Length: 463
View 1: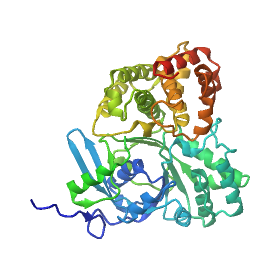
View 2: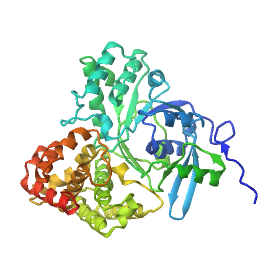
View 3: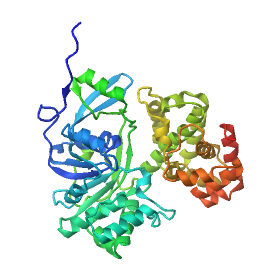
View 4: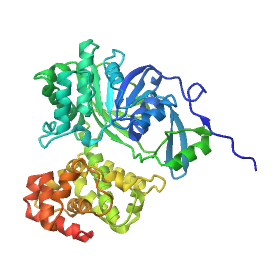
């Protein structure tokens, strides 16, 4: 048997992909979701050749090094039941590590750059209980102090990096700019404007107003299930394409992007690539946060407690699926989209969750529950309590999460892990009350909710 030919290196010089477009967008958070979503929409836009992206990692530099070695090119593997589709995405013109702060400042300050997008997860906005930036966090204080001393000094947090870039842009009068957050936060445009403004005001009183005077913040809803890349994907890509791609991404066929707001200095024609522009993102945002993300949280905590590893495994479990349906029945009546549209979305989610070829790990979804549950579960829980009901779907998610904090299922990976670990220890009833107080003091003081959460935690094996 003739051995297979060695895989060829992926590069633009070898004719792979399109020539690198000029950089007119900067992205913060060079991860798989960005590459399966915003970069993909840009790549498919009819004016893609005019809108190159320079993307920066949030912390780790290795992803940027791998992509830089491939001229920013990578293979997007769209995995459906009938087989895989392999597409080379060409919209990423440059990839930078988080430590390349000089390039970050220079690019954000460039008059050629018109849009900054970001995917830094809910935790990256450093939100406090009042919805603004959590000023007392050590990293927030450290970054504010660093920028006070030298606006060009490297900083760690996403709000501070944006402030540093906007300071550099304002100094050279580079013109208007639009910030586009693509994380699962309700009203993420307003949330981003607030944390950036408040971070700037910590550097100098009134600086936020001055920096944001020429900046618009667009609100978005994003949706595409994108698991982590596993080593076997590299082999799959090499076998199918003959290319040695060290940074492929796997995703599902479904994708949605809804945007609302003003772009101050232009943007790609994303609508021609399938994005939706609307006056009000909220109905789409709630549908996605409650039905998809809320269901993901439910499956992550209940499924992992029952020994499952991935979404499709948990969804195949009759008990998990029944709990999921109960949650959807609670949340769906509060959505404002037409009933038929909600029913169709739920049917599509069932198909997406059941896809065995998308290995979406529950431990990945379980991370940062303290940030996610507040926007995925609590809105429905509060509405149900106002109607005099104790909803089993919502309280079951909270019970499973607290069991997770007490050592069930996946290891805890949360920005507040140390604090929550202490609160979740000890007698279960007392632990539930303490942890719920962190999410919302009204819940910790609600005896009916506490009782239901304790019962569900025990149902799932917590003691």
